[in-house]
Length: 119
Image (cartoon, rainbow, N blue to C red; front, side, top):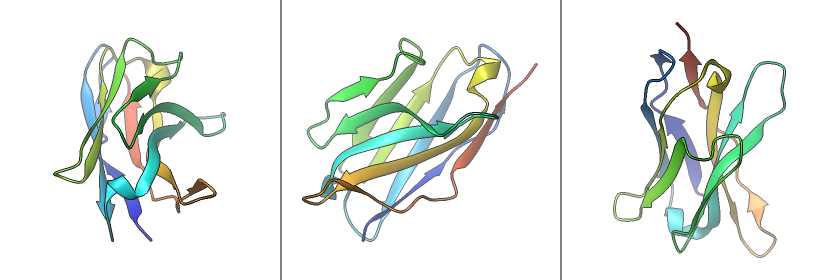
């Protein structure tokens, strides 16, 4: 089974930019119908913030629309999340995961990467 793991988090100031990376191990990101970036912020359930299909069609959710951009590089077997104009409310643990197979099952969750936005 292909596993996706997020990295690149850190401590940022409001208004800053950060790019998260999602690396695949044990196979190709093309194994997934779609790969998404999720986040778990304090006091809230894990939520999807952006996704990108196997054919590179991106979608960002309203909560981050206009600030976050998802992209993929099949040659590098990576998916990225470019985050601009960071807000304190973006603080949380970010995960990447994808749907695969006939049943569009989600893969196993990795440890995620923590993003802290603070002044």
